[in-house]
Length: 279
Image (tube, rainbow, N blue to C red; front, side):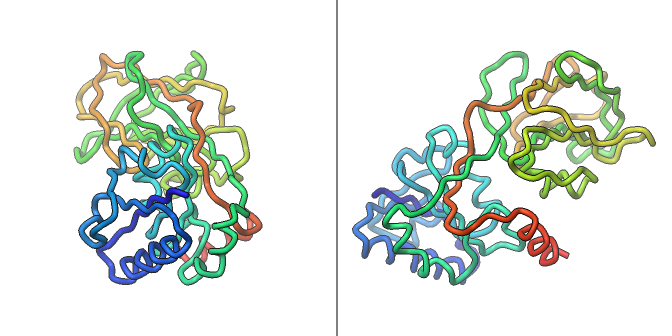
């Protein structure tokens, strides 16, 4: 079994947890590799970059918060590598295990006694280019750090939804409905729902509200002017700038995010627990 380990090592508890995870898999005879930021903490193990996880084809184990998972999810989905998240973050909607739970499930992990849950992802193309990155939570069209609002037209399968003046506009998956989309006023969605939420961010109009569309639809956006420098953000990472000359298209990706599940999944119970912790 080949296992890749990723961790946010800037906090000592996470570094210690990563050590314990690595030791446990070594005892099982697993072939361990670690991601580049933690490689110096674990000399002797092969390392990989989060944009190339080809040395960890069986599973990736993350020690940290949802951000650690999101940093590798695009490449993992492309290579069909499942992720086991151990939560050391604030909320941890994507993680399967909490701190201290890992050792109790080690035998089942080693035996392959777990389920794989698939989650819908988004892909983005600009002017028909091949998408460079996928998104699990959302793609955001944003004004960035400028004070000006952006002005854009948004279409669903060629039908004009609205012309928005706003700080930004996002297309969110059901998984992402508990992330930035929630903070921006979007609806919560159960992860298996086949839909996307389209959420304007701080729209300058009383009638601009989130809209739910089927996940088979293609969302197209076009800026109406270039007064505000505009960027596209994938799961919190700025990936490119766009102008009024660009056609932005967002749709369901053929790739799926894969998560290792060891416990019964109850979205509504999880929602109450996690949001209470967040609050």
